[in-house]
Image (cartoon, rainbow, N blue to C red; front, side):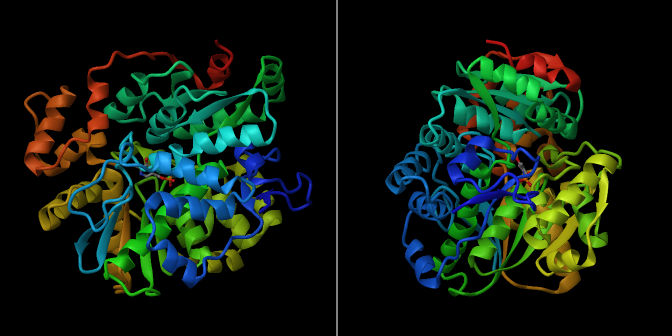
Length: 502
Ligand SMILES: *Cc1c(COP(=O)(O)O)cnc(C)c1O
C-alpha cells in the first residue's frame, strides 16, 4: 500500500511506504498522507473479525494499511497495548473489551472510547502510535531521534505524553493554549512523568498553537539545525496517518459488537454521530465506511465553533469568525485539518491544493457544488450551543441515568436534531469521546450540583461520583497529588525557542 500527499497532483513528492508516512507526519508540500486506495473488507472477513478480541481486530485492520510492517510485530504490539492493564474493562456494557458499546435505548448506542490511560479517545491511537513510529524508524534505517511536536486542544497532549514517555529514540514537546484547556487536562499534562517530555503553554487559542507547530515543520532553518543536533521533527496530531488508521478500528469493532449482541442483523446499516474538532475521528468513520462497514450517514457534530456545520450547509469554509471558548474545549477549532483528506478523496488533489492555498491566503474557500453533493450524500452537519450542550448532559442523565462529558453531549444534541429533522430512525452509534470527569466543573454545573468549594477539583469529582453513582477513572486521581513539573508560558511566535533545549 503506497501513500501520497493530498495535494500532490503533479506527482512531485511521489508515493511512499506507510512507514515513511508515519515517520514524516506531514508531507513536504504541506499536504496530508492518504493511502492510494482504501482496502475493502469482505463480508467473510468481517464475520471472521467478529469473533476476535479488540487487539486482534486492530492488528488485522491495521495490517491492511501498514502492509510493509511485519504482521506478527503488529499483532504483538496491538496485544501489548489494547490490554486490560491499559484499558480498564467496563461494567454493564455490551462488550467489555477496550472500546465498549453502551445501550441507551432501542436504537441509540454510545461507543465509549475513554477507558484508556488518559480517559479520552486519543488513547485509542496514541497508545499504539509510538510503536508504529519506532518500527518505522527501524524500517527506514533512521539513526536520528524523532522529536514529536504536538499542538493540543487538551486531550491529545496528555495521550501523546503518556504514549511517548520514555520511548527510546523519541522525545516529545507538547504545546497547549494557555487558557483553552480544562483544569483537569492542564493538570494531567503539567504533572506528567518521563525523561523525554516537555510541556509548554502558549498564549492564544488552539488554531494559534496548531499554526505555530505547522510553521516549525515548514521552517528549513529549524529542520537543518535539528539535523545537526541529531534529531528531526515529526507530529503526533491526527494529520499523521499513524493516528488515523488505529481510529478506523473502533468503528469496525463497534459494528461487529452490535451485530454479535443481536442489536442489529449483520449487514444492517447504522448511522454514526461524531463530536468533531479537527475532523480526524469522523474521517476515520468515513474510511471504515469506504472499507465496507455498513454505515449509512455520518453526523458531524460541532459546538458553537460551527465552521463545519456551516461548511456542509453552504459549501463555504470560512475561518474568519469569532472564536468561542466552550465547555467542550477539545472541539474549539476553526481549522479542521483532516477535512483536507476528505476533500482530496472526494474532489481530487488538484482541487485540494487550490482550496488549501486559498485557505492559507484568505482564510476561506468555496468548494464546488459537485464536491458538496458528494459530501452531503454521506455527511450531515449540526451544531449545539452551550445551553443545548448543558441541557443535553442533564436530560441524558435524567432519561437514561447515563453520564456524558460535554463533547459527547454536543454529539447527543446534534444526533437528536438530526433525528427530529429527518425522521431517520436508523440505529445510531454516538461516539463518546471523553470521561465526564475530565470536565467535572462543567458537568456538575449542567447537572445543577455543586461542591462546597468549587476550586477544589477533588471535591468536585467526589461530588459528581456520589451524585451519579459512577466511578472516578483512576488515571484522573493521580494528577491531583503530583507536583507540577511544567509551568512555562510563551507567545506563538516564540514556540521554536522551546524545541532545542536539552
Ligand atoms: C479531540 C477530541 C474531539 C474531536 O476529535 P477530532 O478528531 O479532532 O475531530 C472530541 N472530543 C474529545 C473529548 C476530544 O478529545
